[in-house]
Length: 293
Image (tube, rainbow, N blue to C red):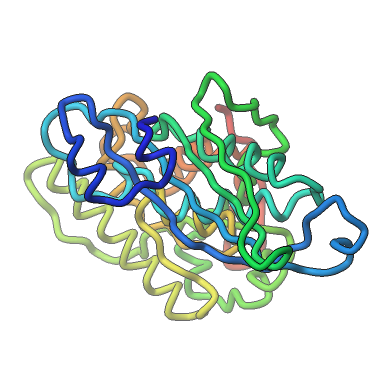
C-alpha cells in the first residue's frame, strides 16, 4: 500500500502521485461505534467510543472501464459489515486483535488486495489512542469456516403456495435464521417470443413479477436482485425474495441452462450459496430436497 494511503493522507497528496501503478481504493472514514473492549479492569462491563478508518486497495480491474454495476465492485457495506461481524464475536482486549480480524474478513473478498486499518479509542485520554496496520493476502490471518457468511435457508415457493396465506410459515421460518424465498411463476399465459433468449428473459421477468407479488403480501419480504444485496440480507438475518434475472443473466461458467424451470433456478441458487438442502412450499405443506453441489 502506498505511504499516503497507509497514513490516510489527504486526497490532494494522493492525487499528485497518480500514475499507471496507482491502485484504486475505497474507504470508510470516521466510523464511530460504542463497544466494549480493553484489557484494563475499568474497561470491562462498559462501552467506550471507538473510531474506525479503513482504506482498501483494489485488485486492478481488467480493461479501461468498470461497469456501473454494484456486483462488479467491492461494496462499501463489506467494510462496515466486517467491523460488525468481528465485534459480534468474542470480546477482545486489544485493538490489534480487532484490527487483524477486520482486515482478514475484508481480504476474503476477491476484489480486496490490501487493507489499511486504523482503530482508535476516544474516551481513554483527552485525544485518541489507537493502532494502525496494513495487511494483504499474504500477511492476513486465515479465516476458518466458523468465520464465513451464514448459509441461508432456501425455500422454493410453488405457484399454488403464492395464493395461500404464508404468514404463519414465514413467522416460523424467520425464527430459524436468514432465508431466501425463490418463487414459481403463476399458471397464467405468458407472452411468447420466437427467439429462445427473448423468451428466457420474458420467463425470468414473470418470476420477478411473482416475487413482487409475494413481497406485497408480507412487508418482511424484501425483493433483491444483486449478489451484493443478497449477501447483505443474509448477514442481517433478513428474509429475501430473489428476483433472478440479474444473477442468472450475469452468470458465466456455471450459468443455468436456457429455459430452466423456476425450481431448477432455486436449486442453482442454493448451490451457489452453499445450502445443502432446499425446502419446497406447496399450498398445504413443505417438503425438503437435497442439494447436490
